[in-house]
Image 1: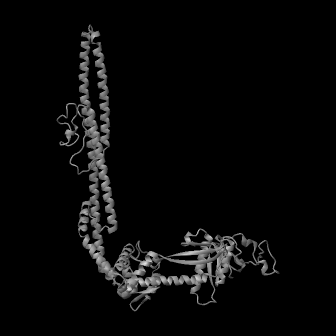
Image 2: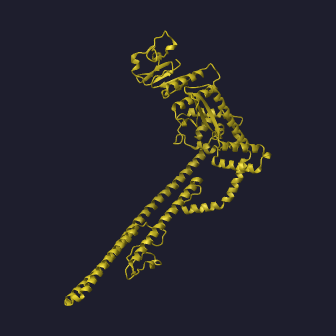
Image 3: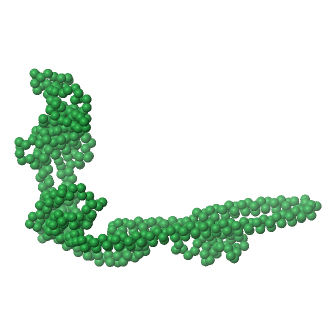
Length: 569
């Protein structure tokens, strides 16, 4: 956009114009995604209109002017010099290549990391199968021993048949004990399954851990050499079997719960930290964001150490800014008084206007008390510093400083709210804050029409001039309100042109739009004049509404896409 506008406007006009506009617009592509030029001549015409507002070093706008000395002139060479633009393009291409290279590197690292995770999961799976295999071999050895013992018992049984009666009680006791042992063995196997399942459900530790949890079976004889331990060597003493096997399993499950709680706590802390960093990056536009989280925290720590000095500097800058601010505040308050004067003038015009059940309409401008009072106090203290206390001035200056920190720009519209007071025929007055809060659509449309007509009427200097205005969807108003709007507009010197899908008796003439060959034609033959019975006793009445048709063929009524009613021919 820079070279294009410089060629059409010249360097001097371009520099003066973009002293009040954002010069970054010149850096955008003329036919890119950000700006689309559909009509360059229209754009240049609008720019010429803005250029004509410059006079004697000031830019005039509705309601005031702006001194160009208050704004620094932009360096247009950055946006119009081909050499500088080429240098910027080279820098952007170089940065793009660097970022593209880093992206490819990151993708390779992620692929290797995923492959390592898959290998680690496979190793853990093989370890679990190896452990189960060892347990199966041990169980097979114990089974052979039990079988040998059974055979021995059978031999002894044969040799002690003669003393069967004496040993029968001992045999029953041994059987009961064997059942108890089997029950205990089943319980231990069930607990073992629970422990294995619990450990398998645990999330994998981070790569920064120096040791990993592995599953092992606790034997009555203690951990054997060559078998993996559950924890590191310093903590393996915690899992030595006690006289009650239930203590070991409970210890393992408790450690698993502690491990899971630690992982959850770590995840929550990491999430809170990331949320805090995101909020800081959002507020500082990622000024302190680094490659890693650790580098970012180091940078924030360094910035925090110099925060006190920055706050002192910022306070000094605020004090300099507040100096001489009273004149601008006075101008803003004067504009607020001017708005109130305009509203009073509108209310005087609306005082004698009533529409149907709308007896009276009044605009109400309500200043925002907290903001306006603060600005008034500050302006008075700035104008007469000798008659104001230092403490009160500093307190109000601090409040204004806080207000400007939250709202860098205070517009005139920020100082007041506009509402409407509607008095109905029964004398009841209702107040609404804006047209959107009015439940009645007819009342809302009526208020809009009256206010706009008054505003336009103040701009007209020639009382003999009558302007037409167009009101769409007139059928949304009831007949009485519509007749009242038409009458009020006529009294103000306007000609209402109404559009409605159905006929209305609010106007004295109807025009039925007819389409032919894809086009809509409107002519005198489409005009229907409506006359009320009391207007002329010599005219022939028609129907209950006493309407008479002047000229209308039956065929022209077959297609009526939309009616246009008006008081003007």
